[in-house]
Length: 57
Image 1: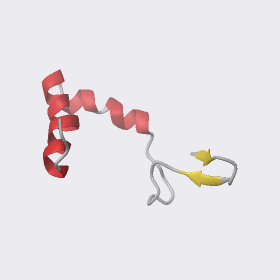
Image 2: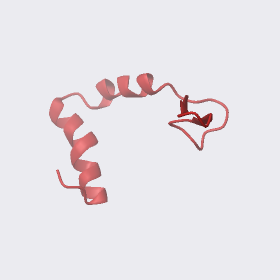
Image 3: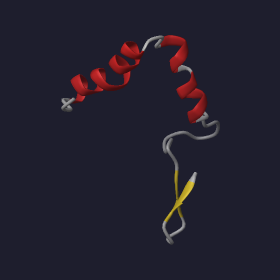
């Protein structure tokens, strides 16, 4: 968690999580287990969100 400027408000990458918060690094490491190739990772992390949310890619 980090602080936002001088106001002292805490900012979390998981604002709706109470209690246990997953380690982001562990979650990223899991990609290697189910997205085995660069093509799979691109489909998962770039192409799919671009299609779902109409992002240019």
